[in-house]
Amino acid sequence: METIARRLDAPRFHPVLAAPAGGPLTLRWRAEGFTVATLPPVPRLRRLDRVVALRHAVARAIRDHHIDVVYTHGVAA
Image (cartoon, rainbow, N blue to C red; front, side, top):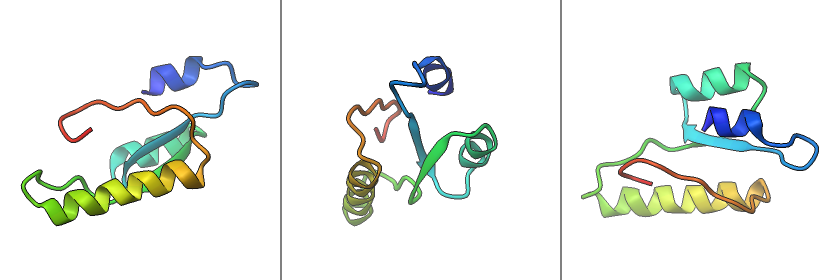
């Protein structure tokens, strides 16, 4: 994601990277000047209540940052 975010046309796009709060990615991305949306930890997929809470947090970040395109990867994505 960092590579994609760095290569975007800065006058046209403002990348917002999202990751669990307090993790190494959020620290590194902020240090590099990216806007970071922090999310709750990714739950085990069998904990439906936590999965729903994470879904709501992602939706809130999309809404709050006026995000138009979402790129995801990984099991929980």
